[in-house]
Image (tube, chains in turn orange, red):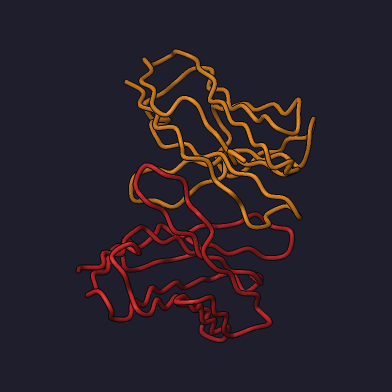
Length: 113
Length: 111
């Protein structure tokens, strides 16, 4: 069991570029989440999904898009990168219910210059 | 508006002593509380949780205490070990609402 995997680990983007942060879990969890963590701050929820084909906005969704075509994958898309999106991004999943104990990936450190 | 507050950004303790990490919350609808531990360059990992129907939950060296009237919870680590050095996040949720995280407290356990 690899758990939750995220790629890439690091990325530097120029303002206006686009990219997709990949997230895959092999635990057959229904619920998946994307968070961002800014320096000295807690985790802020960007988007979440309760199952394939169903996604919903979290606290800070602006500038991001998600899709959930399979149970395993939950990619996060940045369309027009801005310096304010410089952060560490964590993907997580949970099994029993929404907001149940979450298992996190190792994170993607993104810098937008 | 911070609903979950960890007012100490950092804490330093000696190996073998007790570490006490504190967390305050403002939302009286919160009924489930969790602590996550995070090492550098890794994702947070679940440590221990407590439901609002309890005032204490213990798991080995880790104990979480909940004081509902004060809207306060604390994580006790006894005895502290150098491997416990990490950032600890307090998180809370109420009913079907989303999980809310505090800013974290960086614990350093000195040998």
